[in-house]
Image (cartoon, rainbow, N blue to C red):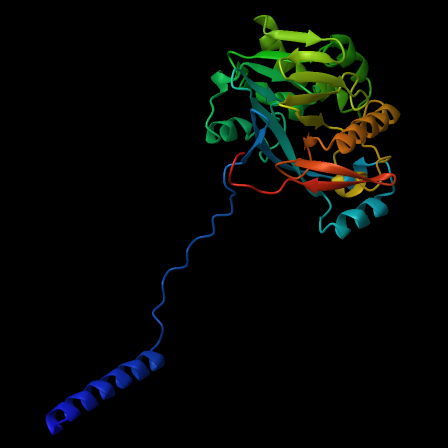
Amino acid sequence: MNTNTFTRALSSTALAVALALGAVGAPTMAFAAAPQVKTQAPGFYRTMLGDFEITALSDGTIDAPFDKLLSEPAAKTTAALRNAFLGVPTETSTNAYLVNTGEKLILIDTGAGALFGPTLGKLAANLEAAGYKPEQVDDILITHMHPDHVGGLVAKGAIVFPNATIHADQHDADYWLSQATLDKASADPKSFVPEFVKGAMASLNPYIAIGKFQPFHGSGEILPGIKAWSSYGHTVGHTSYIVESKGQRMIVAGDLIHAGAVQFTDPSVTIGFDTDKKAASASRETVFTLAAREGALVGAAHISFPGLGHLRAQGKSWLWVPVNYSTELK
């Protein structure tokens, strides 16, 4: 290497070192911080059941005071929730399930609509985010007529699902759509029943008026591939639904369970909204036993979204095994 070449190489190296040292010593250029978004992605999750496409839809979450609602000492409830890293009150999902059979689009429950606070009422938006429109829904199956299951049927008094026929057990219709029930319950200022009756009437009556309500009586096939399974207790007509395709089963359990961290461990614990606590507990045992024995997929309205999983019996308790997340539908 001649002198000029060596000098140039040395100068280049010195310049690179100087620039590097300068970069280390220089103050870091500040950029504006990105704002926090603080919202989730649209609330839907899809899976296959035989030839049926199942879409879990989130209606949002609500803070539930389980320490006041469950039929066990508040301290015991709080301890069980804390053990599951949950607070009191407990943020609780409200889920619904859309079944596309290839021939029909069937929605099971509709969320709260405007009947509860601002953290619920997201089902219609999540339905569209999932690729469907309300007018495409052919049939709607109601597990029971509490407001967080029927409120999404209407928006500002108008029908949301113009082409859908609504199905629910006649026992629930007779109770929750009855003026006599409203009058009797209104005598108790502490009862939740009057507001629930008003919500059911506001949600169902527009469909009844146009002949779009078809009640059924007890267990039996409602639509091809879907059977009603009477699981009375939470309400007088509470119904679970068995969805079946190519030998695969899913049981949509409605409100058979509310606080998984408590009630899977101790299924005897009931909730204050149960119309008949003994019957509600028995229905939970019956449905969960079949689900565990058959390995059926379970969809639960108030288990953390998407509320899909399987059950295993553990003595007198139940182990909830959530579905494994998958990006591929098989």
